[in-house]
Length: 146
Image 1 (cartoon, rainbow, N blue to C red):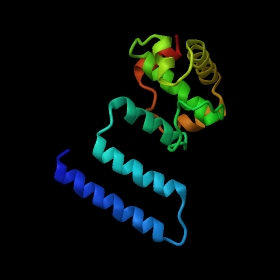
Image 2 (cartoon, rainbow, N blue to C red):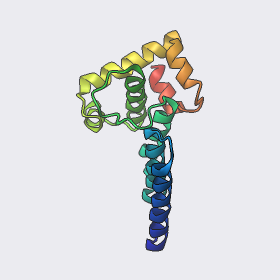
Image 3 (cartoon, helix red, strand yellow):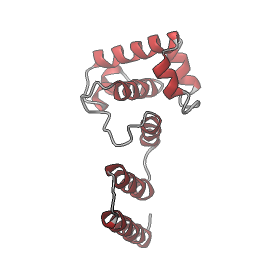
């Protein structure tokens, strides 16, 4: 992105933040979305980052870092989906684990649990997957069904 465009985007972000700060009611989510939109437009995220954002949006956890140690079901499930996503690129379990500050056994366990929940049609998992029916591509389905 050109310097002029970045400067314009920066000014737009300042305007949005000033608007939010002057609002009578402001949610943390509004600020996070504003900054995320700015980052998205300026940094041109990678395909991996876009996919992760999509997964996090589907799970309603857009402001969470998946490398955190949280065991909340929606965060763990989002990590499991990302493990399977990275597995489609034939990355080793250790390589995938390093992306999330985990160990290879945690990644293996996450993939196994996701497969189990998917195969029995876990209602919570299906609820989230139905929010974005194309989140699991063919390569991922091969891993899930193996």
